[in-house]
Amino acid sequence: MSEGGGKDTRERILRCAEELFGQRGYEAVVVADIAQACGVSTALIYYHYTDKESLLRALVERASAVFDVHTRTAVEGTGSARERLETFIESWVRSADEHESLLRILVRPLTDPGGPLSAELLEGIGRTVEDLAAVIAEGVEGGEFAPVDPGMAAECLLGLVNTRAAASVLSKLVPGEPVEPVRANADFIVQLFFRGTSA
Image 1 (spheres, rainbow, N blue to C red):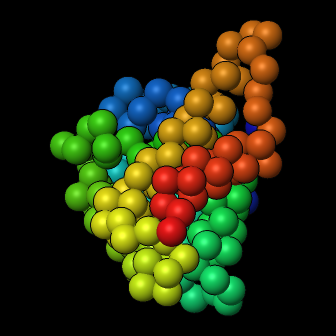
Image 2: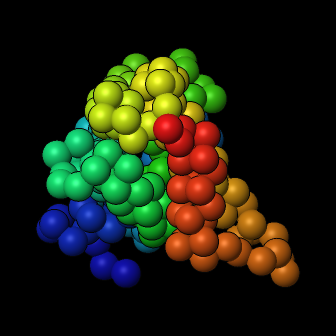
């Protein structure tokens, strides 16, 4: 595989880093591992990225772009609070299935709050919870939902979608283990969450 300094090479390096960070965790990967997985030299990686943390930062930005759009749709979309949250659930679960490594990178600070960029990642998770809480508060105020604490309900909703996504990832790793389709996962979360918040 030939080395190059173009945009395609930069993207390939980032994809290799995404896969390795998602599989092993940031701390367990060194730049040489990424170079080997990509079939490039470490010098070429340093040509495109200052250091390992700059790779992580680029992936965090990518993950935010992929997942934030679903929250924005829930907050700014049309329809009832429940309809917007249902759309959020389905689109988040679908994205988690399509971008497993990015999801693992995003949620890792929940188990390793001292890691690099953890403060920024936790801040992003906090913003997502706040946005979801605003939609839930709207539903409570409009009589769609029972008078639940919107912040706690939003934390539980985000926990549900990420836990189901993680369970799906794990089931793919076990030979012979059935993997729930995305739609079935989303429907399960919808039923469980809205049963608990029904007015």
